[in-house]
Length: 234
Image (cartoon, rainbow, N blue to C red; front, side):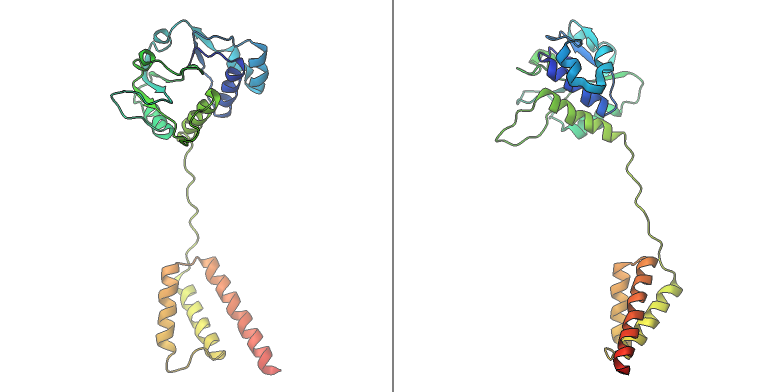
């Protein structure tokens, strides 16, 4: 919901970011510019349908009728009963309602933000963290940040790809290959080989190489054997 939005370019930009992040229901509370404004339509690009379907109401109370959870945004420090949420926490709170009732995100006008009276109609409050040197965000920028977090909350996290683990036979085959190679190039001596190989085992156990990585290491050992045999033959 946008309260008393004044700039048609902002209105069009908000429609555009809503489309970017799969939001479609736009309420305009006492707007000071019209969704059919030429600048708004041009700025919306491929989100003109959001402007065309926007619902215009006279006051915030009417717009919030039937909403179970209402999240208000503010850029200035306010005296509120609850601590400010960051957009990510706000998205989680807004979208974890256990009922099918409507929820709303409310943004104030460009020149003043939401008034204390308007914030009083909101249930929780979001403040976007910014640098102290310049904390002011454009209305469309603020909507974009919050819309992104709403969108990401609904995107399932990708499952990590679990590499194929080597079998015991594959690991033992690697250790045997390693021992023969290191003896061959003179790195190991017969009387100390067991102790040093134990250290290699601990190293590999900590690293937990995949089956593909074990095969890669064995390829290196084969190349070492070939190179050292060729050198000795010369």
